[in-house]
Image 1 (cartoon, rainbow, N blue to C red):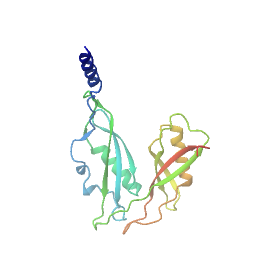
Image 2: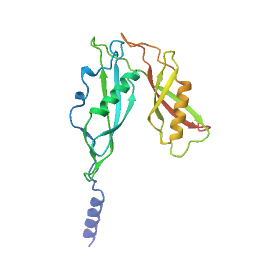
Image 3: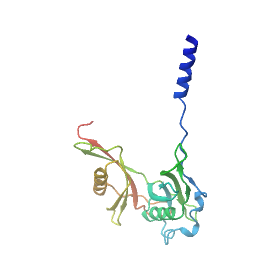
Image 4: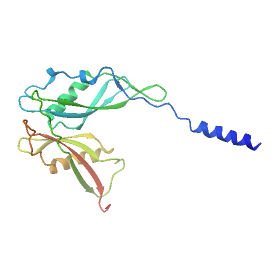
Length: 212
């Protein structure tokens, strides 16, 4: 009888370890390189030396349609970032993500796109800023640092901040942008043969006072 009991136990363990069907990510209906053509370069951007690589994340609904676009690393220029998202939201089409049961579901898709000048200039990466903010107590829902994108006016002062990846708490996200507008320094170096960047990414981490 012992062998039978052992066999039953082994079968029971094997059944418990069976993996559920894996979910599948959203898939572009056509190569992403076809979403943008040379004719899409923003007006006057090339002439003014604006170029760079945009890293982005699209939120894709259960029908395969992009519903929002977030910049996860700036090209260095707000004009290129915003133009990129507008094009992706308009032209990108997907077969939706599916859960383990094959049902369509909301999901994200990430990629990057390069805006290049005809002379072959390659953009430098505009370094991100790490900003630490101390508060009395971390609020409920705070799960991660806040990724923001900040734009600078001609005088080098921040004049706009957007949360690209939130912390899980709306009040903290708002506070992150408030701190960015106060503390973020403007880029100082020009791209080779191009303009001085006007946009940076800032990762804002919150820490409870006395947590160190």
